[in-house]
Amino acid sequence: MTVPTSSATTQPPAVRAAPPWGRFVALGDSMTEGLWDLDPAAPDTPRGWADLLAQRLAERRHARDAGALEYANLAVRGRLLGEIIDEQLPVALAMRPDLVSLVGGGNDLLRPGADPDRLGARLERAVVRAREAGAAVLLATGMDPRATPVIRTTRPRVAVFNAHVWSIARRHGAHVLDVWGLRALQDWRMWAADRIHLTTAGHERVTQAALVALGLPPDDVAWEDPLAPLPPVARAARLRQDLGWVREYAGPWVGRRLRHRSSGDTRLPKRPELGVVVPAAQG
Image (cartoon, rainbow, N blue to C red; front, top):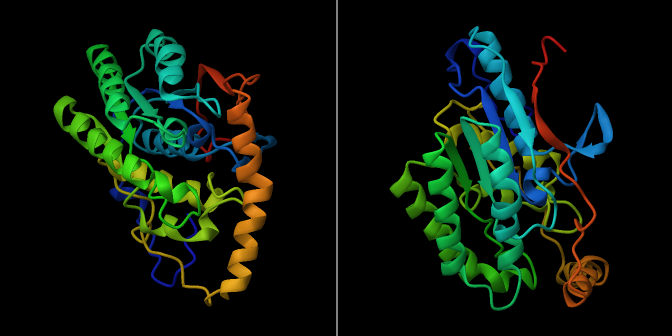
């Protein structure tokens, strides 16, 4: 990992524990699909934090002769939490995974009138199903939207949902990827132009947070360090940027909602079946 700060210190491979999971299935929406983080080996295919996490787990298992890692990613952009649970979870559990990441709810919380308590109850039932099937579960909090115009109005709903995530994890022994608490993500350089999806640098930070959430050491001890601050932006320039964002991204998003359309309506999962992840050293 390359962290653009002077305090970056990479841990030697010898201190990295061998992950115990051999079958990892990722469920979710655009966050887990990896929108705007393109795979260098397949430029038309999104990569994202879950793919990166699978790669790191595979490399660590290989380094300790712990066996191969099989991985599937069923996430599709635009999916609501109920769709993730109803459509993706049964397919995932049929693969008999020992690790499932279940990250969703963000698209629900963007909608006026979203009920984070109902979302939390639905998420808990899904976690119970996965745990009863023998899988470890990785959940994630929602991102703190305080810096984003318009979207910042969802902050109270996101905070309530996050409280449910932590409580669910405690009750059922799940892991929590703390996206809300990841300070580095409050920097716009971590976000794509739409201000909703992460850049490659943002996905890398989330990958490190996922490793820590799973009880594993990060690749870099400086993974939480914020970027060096940029010079302040003049108020007029910031207003122009915000208005441009509303025209190019927020407006079309609202239009799709009014038409009951989603950016993922015709899309299928990018990695629908378990496949062995080849460590970089072997690729």
